[in-house]
Image (cartoon, rainbow, N blue to C red; front, side, top):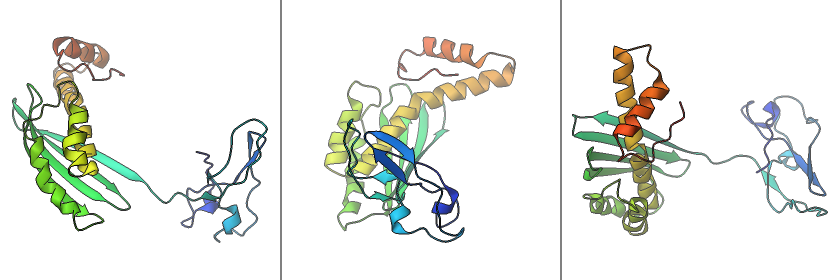
Length: 216
């Protein structure tokens, strides 16, 4: 993707995209726009995300490039109901879809005990049928090898891929949330402790969480 930011190129007057010329495999930014500030630029200047351009040496190509028109966000939240169960709330929203998932997960083995789904925005009349399919996730473990593939197969292909994506992200955050909770408790009692050392010690004591990144 070719992206340049230019305030005058966005209709709202903030982040926008500047034209990129491609000459023999090299990229050079175009001059500043000639249209008046506050006015929308002509279509010919709305260049940035390009189709049909080639990066091959010696290649010359032309492509039409468009403004950013799509973004997607995911948000994962965790509530530790007690020492045994964590409630995970996940949302995914973009310009087309808006979905929510709530799961109760057993901390010891990552098994999904209960799951609920909500489709707030969707495209076809059959989309809401995927909510019932979510119940096939009950009993799955978010720690066994291949669990993400199982979620995509059972929930994604047979139900809704967006729901499957949310469950996958919830599962990936499970042990990170556990570690964050433990670190917060330790730092509360010992504010001068080294967070990196605490995280390393936690990982050493919890071999069931090998996928937690350590970047503190």
